[in-house]
Amino acid sequence: MVSTVEPSYRPMTLLGLLLILSGVVLVALPFVARHLPSLEKLPWILVWVYRRDGFYFITSPLLIIISLVSLVLHLLGRST
Image (cartoon, rainbow, N blue to C red; front, side):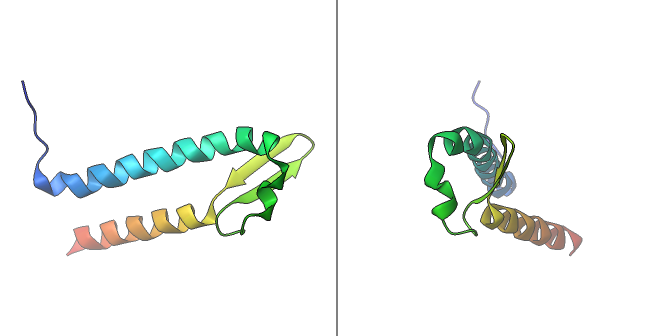
Protein backbone atom coordinates (compact mmCIF):
# COMPACT_ATOMS: atom_id res chain seq x y z
CA MET A 1 0.00 0.00 0.00
CA VAL A 2 1.39 3.37 -1.00
CA SER A 3 0.47 6.32 1.18
CA THR A 4 0.80 9.87 0.04
CA VAL A 5 1.03 13.00 2.13
CA GLU A 6 -1.43 15.75 1.35
CA PRO A 7 0.30 18.73 -0.28
CA SER A 8 -0.71 21.03 2.59
CA TYR A 9 1.30 18.93 5.05
CA ARG A 10 4.55 18.83 3.06
CA PRO A 11 6.04 22.12 4.34
CA MET A 12 5.36 21.10 7.95
CA THR A 13 6.85 17.67 7.28
CA LEU A 14 10.01 19.25 5.90
CA LEU A 15 10.17 21.65 8.84
CA GLY A 16 9.75 18.73 11.24
CA LEU A 17 12.55 16.80 9.57
CA LEU A 18 14.78 19.88 9.66
CA LEU A 19 14.10 20.38 13.37
CA ILE A 20 14.76 16.70 14.11
CA LEU A 21 18.05 16.87 12.22
CA SER A 22 19.08 20.05 14.03
CA GLY A 23 18.16 18.41 17.34
CA VAL A 24 20.36 15.42 16.59
CA VAL A 25 23.22 17.77 15.72
CA LEU A 26 22.70 19.71 18.96
CA VAL A 27 22.67 16.50 21.01
CA ALA A 28 25.90 15.38 19.35
CA LEU A 29 27.69 18.70 19.86
CA PRO A 30 28.72 18.09 23.51
CA PHE A 31 30.41 14.84 22.53
CA VAL A 32 32.21 16.58 19.70
CA ALA A 33 33.20 19.47 21.99
CA ARG A 34 35.13 17.14 24.26
CA HIS A 35 37.38 16.21 21.36
CA LEU A 36 37.60 19.63 19.70
CA PRO A 37 38.77 22.24 22.21
CA SER A 38 38.75 24.94 19.52
CA LEU A 39 34.94 24.87 19.22
CA GLU A 40 34.72 28.14 21.15
CA LYS A 41 36.54 29.88 18.30
CA LEU A 42 33.45 29.59 16.09
CA PRO A 43 31.21 32.67 15.95
CA TRP A 44 28.87 32.77 18.95
CA ILE A 45 25.79 33.00 16.70
CA LEU A 46 26.60 29.54 15.26
CA VAL A 47 27.66 27.68 18.40
CA TRP A 48 27.57 28.78 22.01
CA VAL A 49 29.52 26.62 24.48
CA TYR A 50 29.20 26.65 28.27
CA ARG A 51 31.73 24.56 30.20
CA ARG A 52 32.00 24.23 33.94
CA ASP A 53 33.34 21.35 36.08
CA GLY A 54 32.94 18.71 33.37
CA PHE A 55 29.46 19.96 32.40
CA TYR A 56 29.04 20.93 28.78
CA PHE A 57 26.09 22.88 27.41
CA ILE A 58 26.22 23.66 23.72
CA THR A 59 23.52 25.33 21.71
CA SER A 60 23.10 27.29 18.53
CA PRO A 61 21.46 30.68 18.90
CA LEU A 62 20.93 30.76 15.13
CA LEU A 63 18.88 27.55 15.21
CA ILE A 64 16.85 28.85 18.14
CA ILE A 65 16.09 32.08 16.27
CA ILE A 66 15.11 30.18 13.11
CA SER A 67 12.85 27.87 15.13
CA LEU A 68 11.13 30.77 16.88
CA VAL A 69 10.59 32.64 13.61
CA SER A 70 9.12 29.55 11.95
CA LEU A 71 6.84 28.96 14.93
CA VAL A 72 5.59 32.56 14.88
CA LEU A 73 5.02 32.43 11.13
CA HIS A 74 3.12 29.19 11.48
CA LEU A 75 0.94 30.55 14.28
CA LEU A 76 0.26 33.76 12.35
CA GLY A 77 -0.64 31.74 9.27
CA ARG A 78 -3.20 29.72 11.23
CA SER A 79 -4.96 32.73 12.72
CA THR A 80 -6.01 34.21 9.36
